[in-house]
Image (cartoon, rainbow, N blue to C red):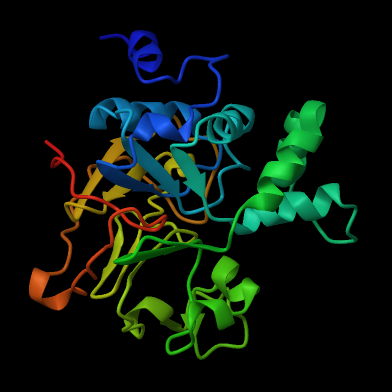
Length: 282
């Protein structure tokens, strides 16, 4: 099946009306948590094709929907128009809001380019990005963009930590030289995060990092909540040069053994935060 036929079949054709939540029949078959997109719309479609994305599946993104990649408008239009798609706020998403708000800050060339691309309908995009939460609670899992301080409830975390944290024990939360927060975190929920790109997912007993540098030419990675599996597709191009060399190769990292992972909490049917068992990724 060609991509355009598939997109029509699952309601992704350009111009389709927003899906009514009743189309989901009150249940979700699969929860697909996707790493940093950065405007990599084509790779997102490749990933959904590979997963045979269906009407009762949903996508949750770890933030940084835009900036650096080629199709920021297409990514935002998809997330705005289709209720199966949701996201937390990323630091680049926040920075674009600050740019549009006229804050006296230093913005990158990539952020300025994204702002120009989206300027024709700034109001719509500003409204959507402003509505994004800092975390999404999936019951057994918690989605944030960057990280959190171990031992502090998510609602008491500093917003800048949720958006930018990499390591502990350093003056700057963005430092790569301290102790990675996810090596210390031991909360009941498994945290799914992005922000810190690597060749392969960052795996810890209670956290999984999903940013595998798609915009830098590596891969776009997703995690299947119900089956505890990773899936990825290669980037179609190198859209932005990163701080390190990314070369496209399959994601081979294995998740920690089941006895080292957080046991999922039971989920109540009908809850707005509940998820339901679905078919495995083939």
